[in-house]
Length: 112
Length: 175
Image (tube, rainbow over all chains, first blue to last red; front, side, top):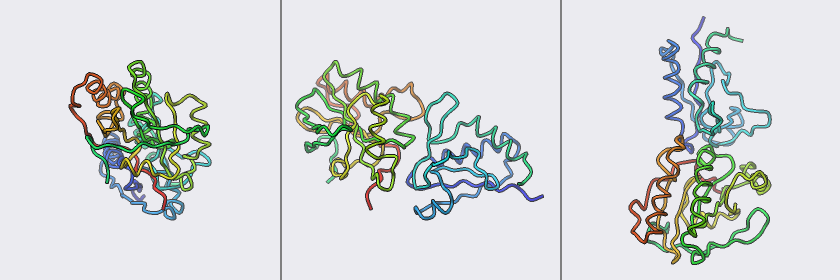
């Protein structure tokens, strides 16, 4: 079985991706999967954002699945993505606890 | 040229979400805070309540706050005037929400991000420019950099920290 593909899609116009990458690596470490490489993909145009179904920076995917699926009608564009923390606050990066939990679930799931 | 603290900023008039023209008119307040913001940026949203609290806390001391949305709503429909109006109707902002459709005001101020916060003295001189505080993720900071600048200004002292680095989403300029 091949290793899951972990991607972090980002846009340079939003300053949150270094923090998101650190959170992602910390979550993988805590799950004992710090060995998994994270592929960084820079999104640079509206055309690419549409093609990639990029709902904002940062977007994380595990084998193509977003642990935080964007809502219906969410536009695909070069923008910062809005996440909600567990306490309801807005944040440019996912809630670390939720990220760990959802990554654990996706990493356990057999490829679809 | 982008103004920096100690420069004089030009007056402006922009419509609020009901179309009512609203001017900077710096001489009409003890200090005026111009906060560039928008509807869809997580940084702007994270700092919104702290800026609202500044508006409420300093209004009795003669401070006026204006929120200005400069983003290109054609490419970013979530920043449309209708979307701005919906936020006002939901009472999400504790000060007028102005529409900088031409982006001229944001350009004149040299605004770079949402949020990007400017404090203007009654004589039109810029007293502070930057972020509300050091961390969008820590509400306990209470927009402390902005409050400190206002406190200095209202006390007649030089502003101790007149310039910080704005942090947030890049302003969505028209192509």
